[in-house]
Amino acid sequence: MDSKIATPISSLSEVGAIIRSARRRKKLSQTALGERAGLSRMPVYRLEAGKDISLASLLAMLAPLGLALSLDPREPGPLRAADLAKAFAHLQEPDET
Image (cartoon, rainbow, N blue to C red):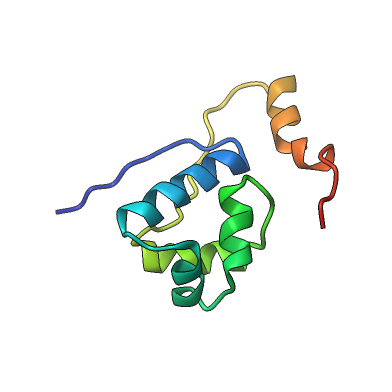
């Protein structure tokens, strides 16, 4: 049965919450997910904390979780200040590395 769930996402914290939920449903630790994705635990931790990671790392995590990335056209309409603030919020956060 195809159980496609379309969820519009506007922040890294939302992506992290989806990954965390899927990981927990699969009963995987962050370390176990990292290993299955060919990564260390750190990218899993960073994403679940709403921090930026590489697209390659995100894509590597999807298969072990049974998830896929889908990009769909955005609803037409004017770009709002809130859209820009969300898109560039990561540039305002202090670097914790």
